Image (cartoon, rainbow, N blue to C red; front, side, top):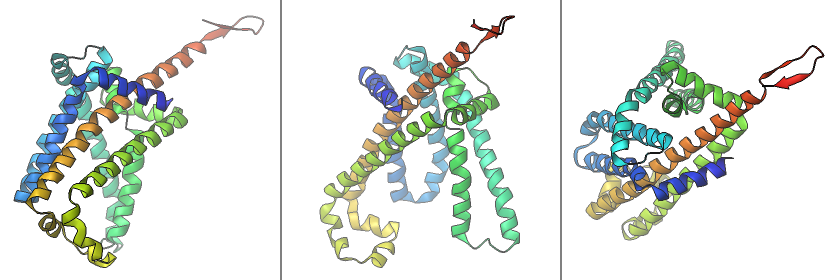
Length: 280
């Protein structure tokens, strides 16, 4: 099932260039964050991340809305973003709050027990908490837009889909993660090909020396041209990643929710006086 929806998403993207706008804007933001980090450090980046995140949420909301409505134009994208912005933002804030609450509940006893300095344990607990929560609530935005659900109802709908259709959802995740890793690998190969001359001295380093390289040292190694090449690679990667994954997510959710609705309709009926089952 997941492969068919992935192909469908690629067809939709090929026929509707407007759907690439969230990816293009995301690519500009990603490249901009990299350049701001190199030029000014993390101070300005941390201040701008919230604004950039809100812009992306607006465009992604519009993207989901126009695919649902079938009217894929620039005006519809903007209108859909305005209509569905808070439908996506509010559940996302709830999910973030729940994640922080769970982590706090787990970390406070560990801190009192003297494990606060064990960063590897804290990181492991964060992963064990964040990953299941992320997987269970991954479809909250599509549920909110496609089915006009409210904040908690959209989250509950996502959990329902994941729990009731674990096989289909697992295939969705495997294919999506495979695409993500393949894209990252391709971008890394492209980056290393462009920066081969700058990175060649690192081939003589041993593992401990490579691990000891700081981000500032890496920036100095790749030089000004490498900084701009890195920005270009980030732009290309994000431009591809956002439209493909979100259109795939929308197509998968639409197909799976239709199947679940059809299944419910098929089992609706009643028994007659002789115990025979009749469907409505």
